[in-house]
Image (cartoon, rainbow, N blue to C red; front, side):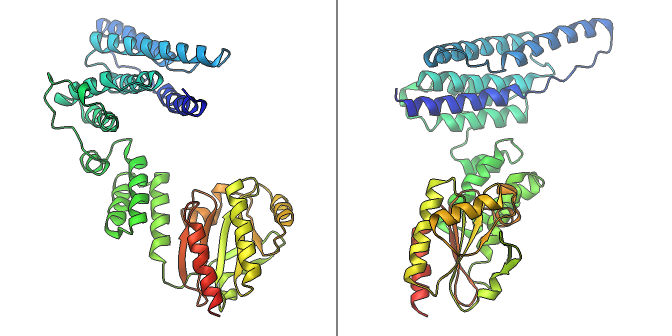
Length: 368
């Protein structure tokens, strides 16, 4: 197994462990002494399960960590199933099932094998889900399992349940309140944006507004939709400059304008800045403004000086929490936004597509 592969596995499993560690331990109500005794025993077992979900400090070799982590996950599955056997209608039933499915995925990931047991358990749960939350959880992990190609692993003794989903879009339609919806909606929105599928983009943004009105993913989709809707229209904003004062894009009308969101510590962003500076030198009519996500204005000034760029730089010292990146849904750098000489939004592009957009900006500058 390569080191990069192992790092990926560690990231996935640790993500599941940390999420599991956040499981709330809610007390159960007791109507009489007998019920109170049972509730106390149930709560004690549940607290033990939650405690076992906490990741241990890494003070061992890398290979030993894999072994101990797998052992922890296997033990967690055993404890959760013990809980579900003793308290099938317990106060923490849904949360216990969530922990079980996450642990089964972690075990399969650590072993680099097909998640046969996870797939079997999901199908079992979807045949007769104990709640809507359990159905949503099982359907999600079943969808994850479907990405693994292993046709011989299906359990033919279990009929395909009606809760199975065949795509992320299908999952969103069936379980719009699931905790997995925000991350799936963001991924599908970004894919739809690449295809310029405006109808799907609008549908996903509305789904998030209806079901997760205050979620950060909803704000992000609204910002991305705002930027997409602005294409081909007059686009104006004001930047606070690191040297003091402000600059408004309206002041630069008459020339193509490239706005690059970057940071001096990010190598791809620095490469983008160098390419834009080279284009500006070759086409002096091309105007450029930098929006830096560095933690200090002085850091931005030093990075710009080192790169030999003299165009205006903006930095509100809020990084990814800054007004500009939140307003327009920018989550990766470098990010390039280009206005034509009439001040209309010509296009925007992230790390993978900015070279093509820069070429369009250069061509627009060459027309002046």
